[in-house]
Amino acid sequence: MLNDEKKSLIEEEERYRHEIAKKISDEAAIVEKDIETTTNQIWAKIYDILNSNVGLLILSSVFISGGAAFYQNMQHNYESRVNSQKEIISCEFEIANRLYVVKNLISHAKTVGDALQALTGAKKSLGPVKPEFQNVGLAVLYFNLYQLTGNRNPSVEQDLREIERVYFSLQEQDPKALFNEADKESMTKIFNELFELNLKDIHHLK
Image 1 (cartoon, rainbow, N blue to C red):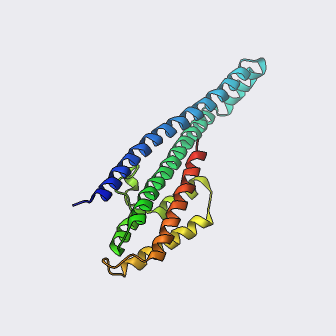
Image 2 (image 1 turned 45 degrees about the horizontal axis):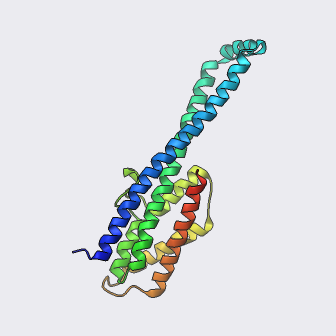
């Protein structure tokens, strides 16, 4: 049976997942709208040029030298940018989801078993933002972000290594033993800091 504290945590996590899903949808819509607006502005400028006498000469030259290829390349770049932004948003919110759940569970962990269960959230998700993220660990999610954005944070990498160290250390201990206070304090601090940093990254996406 679940006690009231765990029921409350589960309900809070479920509400948070719904908020994340809505936020992703809103952010993706904003990204597409921004890109669409920018693209329309570019084409408007091109249209103005092409309506001039000089534009007619350019138009003839473009079609002769491969205007269709130019258009296809522009369309491909547009689609790539939209997909990339959507993937960045999904990764950021999946990371936020994981960190939020783990930081709450780890702060309430009393035994080694409780701590292991909490840190399992860093390895997989019970309520992923996207189905393909379910069995993807935090380290891989952060690496995906690095590939998409080119932004690397050595401090985050160090925190991820410390999480791995504690996780594997706990696996060798008695699940019924008390969770070491030093490790509990360290993990709580790390997950709180990662969560705050992640929220700032999400804010900068706007």
